[in-house]
Length: 482
Image (cartoon, rainbow, N blue to C red; front, side, top):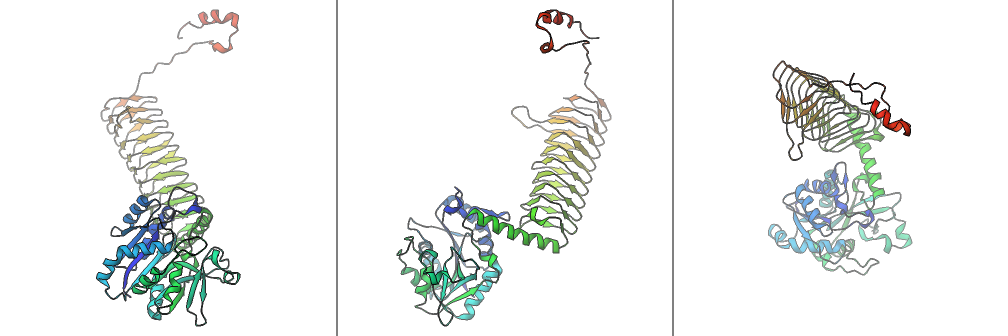
């Protein structure tokens, strides 16, 4: 089938979402509604793909061009309605369409931008049905048990579509119809141009309805319908309640697909996996696990409970629990958590450990190196098989610049150390407890800070002294170190 053009309707505000964000920029499965619809429509290889914008036009345009750099952006004017959006698009595309289809025998696909689960397979089936039937227009429909809020598909005696009636304009008998419009259509190009020329706003909302074009199209030939085999794929989102319900249904399917691919998911109800995540065999996901963005997890890794990974690359047989990790790399057999935070730009080597209450930022940790607990490691490079004592901080910020720290291999950093960047500790160094390292430490050295212990015996806190004896106590307590 020759698909001359595709029009994606993304001009609406989505007032029921109650947000400053345009509705098409909400996300499901890690991608915006608009991105998902463009991907589905783009798979049909239209010669021209256009996106109609108005509310939040700069944001919507930017997202559209990220998803499809060759998209033609069309701005809808102040006249409301989906019919007006298509009028604006056809006016803008008239010259381009005429150049590739002078007779208007090709087809135009129209899709709403708020259908996040619309897929290429459904659109392919719709276009095949349209071509086989010889119809001048074909409506993508679905049958719902509770069709409230949707436009009803009114069929004639021969099964063709006579018209689509919006909920507000429907009679009681029409509201009883369970087959509904999904806001996806294929039109013969010349028929669409004529049908939208006849639109008006004589309806309950005083808008130009695209659905009215279906009735006008019937004057030029048969209007068909194709019922989507998967109602979830054609469900639109009008408010946040619908979004949550749709997201949960979709995520359940994603989890089931991964389980069939050899991934163990203990509790799919509390495990969320974005569409672009990739999991190897024998990965085990424990409750309250969130895998976001383009996260990739290697074979045999155990993740959870209470973990969020965003754009992470995790090697095989790693163990991550109770941690937040972003845009970093974890090597094979590494261990992270509990209560760890890995900020972007980190690399944790094979067999390495980021332990309890450890925060890392823009740091590279060598193979077999351990940062067990209660430490902050920022802008730091650490070699292999080094141990970082608890409470250690690499003080990377001098008030203006983030400075680097370099720690070699086979180093033993004592507890409660402070490494004041920029500073370097060579291989094989040992540092004492409580050391403050400000200067280069040579290979194989012991580095410690002088820290004499003082004791004042029989000392009483000032707040606990009787008022009459405070002066005497203060004199007595100045006895010095013993």
